[in-house]
Length: 183
Image 1 (cartoon, rainbow, N blue to C red):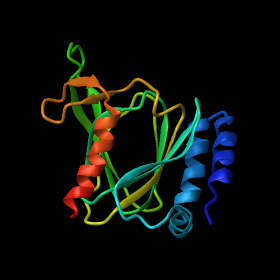
Image 2 (image 1 turned 60 degrees about the horizontal axis):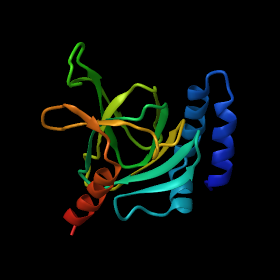
Image 3 (image 1 turned 135 degrees about the vertical axis):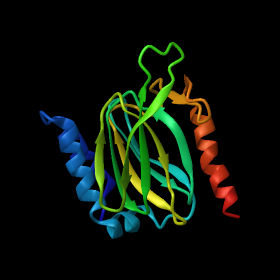
């Protein structure tokens, strides 16, 4: 069964590796390879939410649960991340800044689908949006190389793709709005 204290220790040890992002990805991949263990430890997903499992200045571990058909607008982290899915599906669109655009507009640059058991590293400068395109809850483990909740970040307007400051409260409301749509 998944043990959060052991997982934090394993992530911290991996962060000391020469290729820390790859090493942390291996830790996350091992965890999401056992969906039953994660569900046993973290609970069956019943609502969209972000559960903070661990938080320090150099490491944040969260357990986001994406409600069915929920989307989070393009955003960055300004730190490396490893995303691992253990139930449902998380579709990521990756974006890049439009060169020489003074307003910070972005354009699509790629995509990846993450299903149960898949873990991917995201570099410090990655911009992505996340969608759960399914009719079920998607549960994941996200590990960040910093304090996810304190880092100054950006988000992009979903209509005109212009850059603005990340609004964490607004993004947390998106989870509640998605839950309200479920009835």
